[in-house]
Image (cartoon, rainbow, N blue to C red; front, side):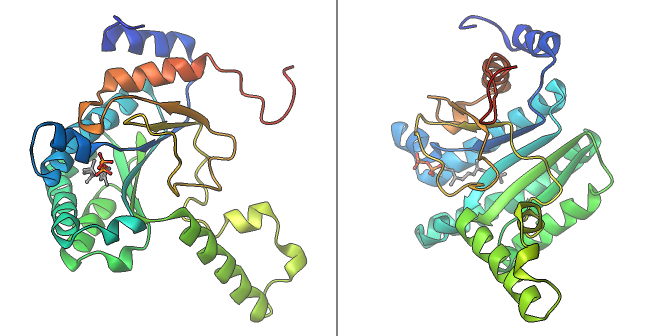
Amino acid sequence: MEDSSAAELLARVRVHGHLPRHVAIIMDGNGRWARERFLPRPIGHRSGMKAVREVVEGSVQAGVEVLSLFAFSQENWHRPESEVSALMSLLEEYVAREADELHAQGVRVQVLGDLDRLTPAAASAVGQVVGMTSGNDKLLLNLFISYGSRAELARAARRLAEEVAAGRLTPEEIDESRFESQLYTFGIPDPDLLIRTSGELRISNFLLWQVAYTELYISPLLWPDFTRRELFTAIVDYQNRDRRFGRVTA
Ligand code: FPP
């Protein structure tokens, strides 16, 4: 696999056929990528946009149904003001630059997270691409922005508590599927494969409920260096795993 080209790996992915329906990615290492080059951190984030394009196109090529990208966490709001505003501008720029191409490729974009905190310009940019691509069905691209999994879980609990308080629901009716119905990801299959770049072995408050049985793949590459070839490598690795979901092999 070390020397295989992207095209060879894609052919292997297709021949195997047992695809992950949903791939989630923690895009990590933009800051280190910039530091290694004595560049400011926002330049690392900007370089990360190319890798986003790579994995979107790669997912379409491979036939993945859902791609979830952790683009901005709730914790990221605590970064220096200059970096936060650079990330917000980058989000607007990404949408402006990629919207037509995403639409042409049949990608439906969804933005998930606490969107009330976005700058009005960023909120309007993402609103436009979400509206424009809403009829597409080739790939669902979930951009998680201002997202934290614990906050998502607390929000779900609060919404169910409100239903109970209003007399529309009894505590006994709260089961896993009822709980899931209050998550941002309701209706989307759980991730089959979670990729994290930059060699870190952490989930970092991303989709804690949803990754209960997800296969993990850690890439040593820093995010701006990630390409569709690495995506296909991760998928081939996934295809060779034995998923048991807590049961025994048949
Ligand atoms: C983590 O690297 C990355 C982020 C906080 C932002 C991810 C954003 C992008 C890839 C760019 C744009 C993408 C979209 C979809 C608009 P880090 O800064 O934590 O890196 P470090 O751990 O090396 O410091």
